[in-house]
Image (tube, rainbow, N blue to C red; front, side):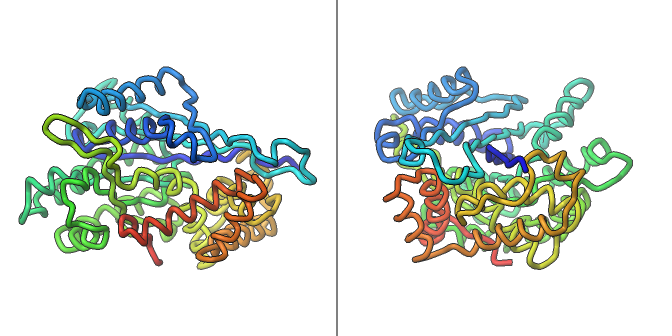
Length: 391
């Protein structure tokens, strides 16, 4: 049976204009090109489009060397694809006894223009808005940015900004609904994990991830519930949906009057781990609770099975191409894949560190990288910049 030879995880980033999406992406990529990062990391982050990579790196260098933030973009809907290219290890220098279920890992970042949720657009721009949203439906994780500057500007009355943000986003989704649903049928393929992310968190140094969560619940609980209802109305198996249950803090750099400290970042090292590992954890929970069925469980598990197989030393069970999977549904294979995801999701603490240490010693850079991603999520929670749902 043909196996999946590449793991590809998609992440969609939503935020109003000025919320820091371009700065965040530029800082994320630019940091991976620094000599210190290249020396200690087990992988290289390589853009599929070299021109895109150079523009992001230029943005980063402009901040680092000239205190020049990236130019503001309007209505620019762009997807960025990065290959996570592993450094040579022992696994690449000898023929393995059994093939790995995964040869590569790729992150695809979808940047959705904030103006489309703030302004009414018509004609060709309206069609582009729908087409762009369709292109990111395959994302596993969506980040909804809450602008730290706006919270600071509305200190004491944060609900004004938060309600406006969530209302605009909710209404924007409602305006897309008829165009997204064919004959009113709910979507099988759709982002299932919606993380609330505080951008520019350096402006609010006393706000850890717990206080950020509490602020959202205190000031905008009803609006979050309404957003959840709208998203649930778009998808099949809407119990398998996490909206406003995960929280993370981001700061792309420390902005001062005459300089930008790009080394003073918060949370950006969690982007790859969130995209790669959070879906494995959540889908395993949903599968165990029998909250996902039929085509939905097939679609979710086929996207994460190869990553889980690496962590658990398994070859995996599902056929690679999604089309084959949907046309050849095998309940036993799906059950086995759900167990595989569950086994990977349970790895934590000392056991996870043991796996990572052994993989590094054996120069199994793929397994070391993925187990390291899981460890990064645990570290993020210990440092109170990440809070994962316990549901």
